[in-house]
Amino acid sequence: MAKMREYLGRSGNIVYLINLDTNECESFNKFGKMEGKTTGILGYAGSKSLVEIDILSLIGDPVMSICEIYFNGYKGTVPIGYSEVLSRLSGKLSLVDPVIYRVVHPEGVMQILLPCRKEKLINKELEQLLGVSIVWSSL
Image (cartoon, rainbow, N blue to C red; front, top):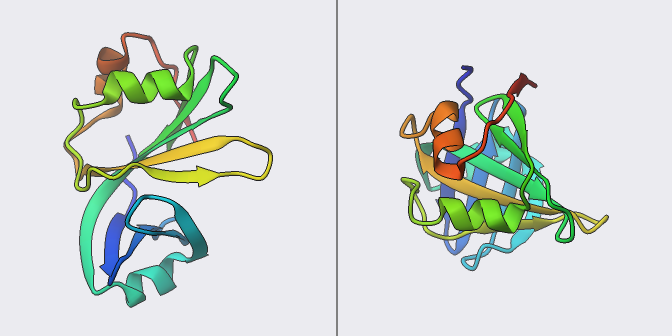
């Protein structure tokens, strides 16, 4: 599976989740609420401390029983809602930071970003943790 160059950066009370491969960076307050977006390069350069991570992204509509999972350059879909996915993974992941980072998209879709310790989780393990089969496709 592909490995992405992803980082958790900090500067004061702001946390940055950075993906240098896609040149994306979201900034969050200490409670996990998204504050803004910038380029990955600017987020990387503006961080006072950086930790290399793997970002696990869960995307879903609060009323739908389907969740898209993005991890290490791959996308998978599972037939359970994002809140149930989060519940099943709770306490089972090796996270760099226990905060659940949230992005609410304008159309009402929720995105959860979990900063996992680098190379402590592989795509196959997600199937075991969730108890469902996931068909992965490359991004």
